[in-house]
Amino acid sequence: MFTIDNKWAVILSDFCLDIAKAYFIASFISQSITINGVNPFDLFVALTKGMFNVIIFLVFSRYLLKFKK
Image 1 (cartoon, one colour):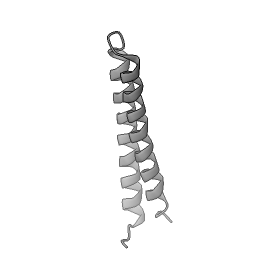
Image 2 (image 1 turned 120 degrees about the horizontal axis):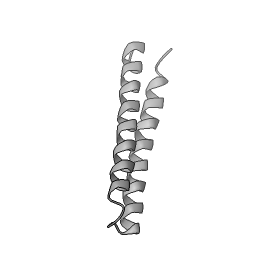
Image 3 (image 1 turned 180 degrees about the vertical axis):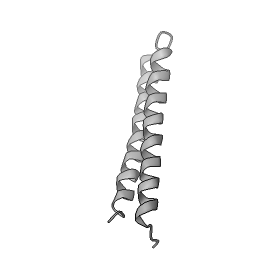
Image 4 (image 1 turned 90 degrees about the horizontal axis):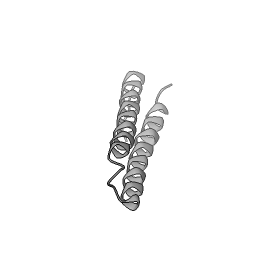
């Protein structure tokens, strides 16, 4: 399919981890700031969507580390 050397695998993996951290912070902090006027179901949907995206980036980061020797 395609090959990734060790350097690029580590760089892309770290990049995905940074995106996952930023997405986690943004989804939970922004929701907790506006918690007063938010419907609980809407809050649950937003937090679930945020966790789903974080998990996707974490899985992709781990997948990239498999290329590292």
